[in-house]
Image 1 (cartoon, rainbow, N blue to C red):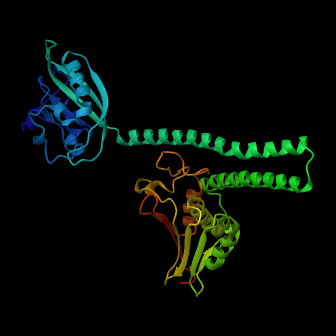
Image 2 (image 1 turned 180 degrees about the vertical axis):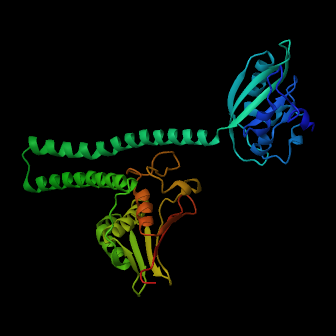
Image 3 (image 1 turned 120 degrees about the vertical axis):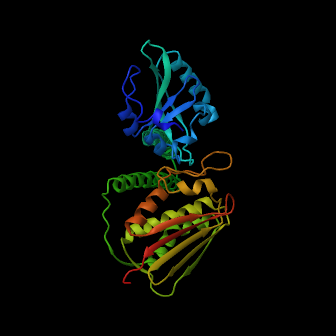
Length: 370
């Protein structure tokens, strides 16, 4: 490639080209001839495009290096600049090594002393970080809107049930047993809404780093037993079987008893919710030299492979095969689990062989006293 003709060999002149800018710029600068072929590439461009050297592009049609779906935009921009007008566009194009990149591209016609267009100068600026940040903001905004819609839906059902029950109490003469039954219904709906409110407050506290943990030695066996007492009526009502295999020795961690119960209850509660009537849930607890490991396995609806990487994200909910949400809830339970586990210096992972094949959650805490 005749790099000297487009590198330091260019001097400021009638066409306005500046050799120092060409050589020193970190942006990708290319010079195109009147056929749209590459006649020069600056050192910054070699680095930005992850090329071995500039010769790879020499004499090639610049448009051919772009993905097919944006090539027409590239050709149009070149034509506009050849007609004497600056052109600009933004598009995706990977580097020579396949690294994803988004570019902001400006094409400027270069003229001779008589004003005729003799070359085109293309300045491509890597805006990948900006693009990804914008995508993240858009995704966060979309998830916020989805969450608000979901929250409205989740609140509407218990509010409607409680309101109807209150109306019955106001308008009908009922036997004491019936009054007690309706009172229990209202109590259940209020408790459901209270749990949602507490989860939302917990998310806010975790996000702001305001969760206060009362750290003390805790045997995780006691945590598991406490959780099983909480959920016993729920899994028995569904005819489910819960088997436990707890280590005989103490499985002690340094943690907050209440938060540890919340972690295990969230996972076990999901296993109960997503497992069918008559399903099986297994809880195993063992310790190694430096770790206490809790494993919760169920025979439920399973998790698609595509969902596993984002399962612990805030407001993330699994979907059924028909595209609907798997069940009620705000999609914050597992995000809380991960945050609380990490605050205890541990880790949590999810595994599944796919939809319909159950799930397994593995929670690891540092063993206390090692």
